[in-house]
Image 1 (tube, rainbow, N blue to C red):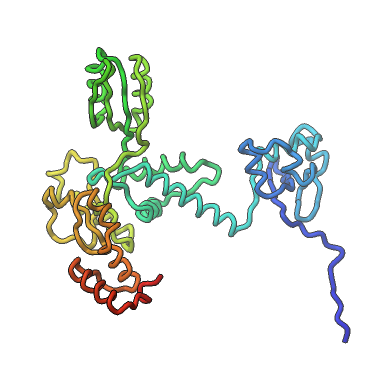
Image 2 (image 1 turned 45 degrees about the horizontal axis):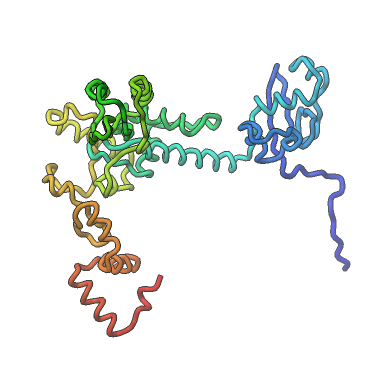
Length: 364
């Protein structure tokens, strides 16, 4: 029995084609474009129309190869010039993508919006940012719908405003350095007080005092205009200023559903309404927090290593701890799902391992 290769010769499959569709006057018009070129054209990166269009022909249905009628083009566009009509469809039309591709794009944009929100916001009590998983969960809770035709940054600012209505969250302050003449210093300090700015430091050298402050991003334009009017100079030190080191916010139980988070916030607000009436919000309650709600100031300043299950001091000591052999040894144990050891136990185990010379169990 002979084997023959059967190939269809009467079909022309459309591969690598992106369809842009525009509905006008009750009629549908389509053009065939190259993938990834439509967005480049709309953003201004691509200028050559021939690099975007597969052909300067207007269709009523690209998939079936049905061309648009001249009288329909004249009614809808008042012209029969195919090139001009293609440009208008390319500019105003809707890019058609597959279902999985659209879902992937929306998922990526949702993540981008959540990342921007995380970078621009903090917990008003701890002054630390929330985790990306927490922001995504709260965005699902408020039923935020993504607009694929709008920028991620614009939508992130809308998300922040909506989250502020339901949860304890606020914009992270900007850290600025303001330099201006000596005679204007008192006026500037008074103005910063009106903006509720936090003055971090003051320096004076060469008759030009310098003020480092943290200010709400909403007052940035007013502050810039005001400082320029005083013949001063403004420098941005940090777009989003927040405390360094670990905070309780990083140990929130990610398995918590949004309803339990909302109820936890409400219970906390009820219990501390008299003591925190002036606060913009209360932090979320962790699932592993004990019944004690008050902590000593020294304990608040400590940083805890979850790998070694130990408090390791301030931010500097916390960073040095990650370079220690104690932390590295416990990290190896953690990969093998073993409990952490104390420094003494860690030294004893490392010495015994050194004598035996068996280091294979620590290989990654």
